[in-house]
Amino acid sequence: MPNRRYNGLNLERRPRGKSLASETSVYGFLREPVHYDDARGGVETVYENTTDSPMPMGIVQMSARQVYELKTINVDATHVIKIRYAEVNESWRIKVGARDFEVLTVEDIQDRGIVRWVTCRERR
Image (cartoon, rainbow, N blue to C red; front, side, top):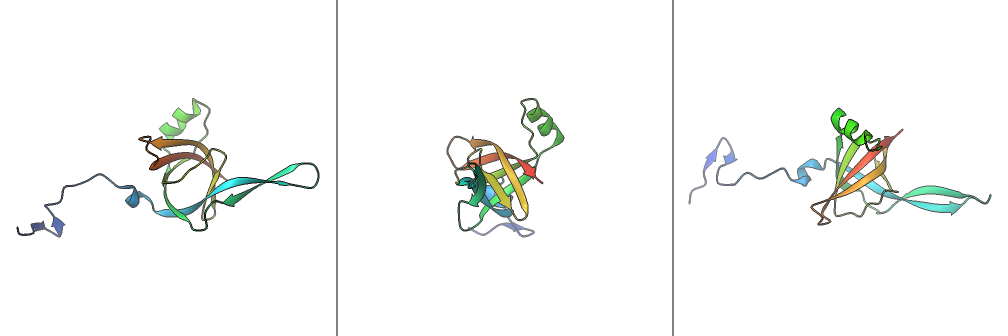
């Protein structure tokens, strides 16, 4: 069967939806809280990386409508981060370059543990 092409496009392949690999444009670290004794009877919380190498993730800034809808349930979010195959907790933070995000909610898309949408607020 000959290969049908038109302007460099392969016409025999079926078009598919957008994959997460095309949406993951940045690499970042998941950071979990570690509590240390501060020698004055208190506890100091330090966030440490959970992995040695950065993982791919996609960051999407939320629209004004999404921010308004989340504020109705008292969630002050600014970004949605899409992550694959990673356990994330609401007490963690995400570090992408010089940016630091506080995790607010974690949604497991399709309840299969493959893609997680993490609603975050950027810390300044």
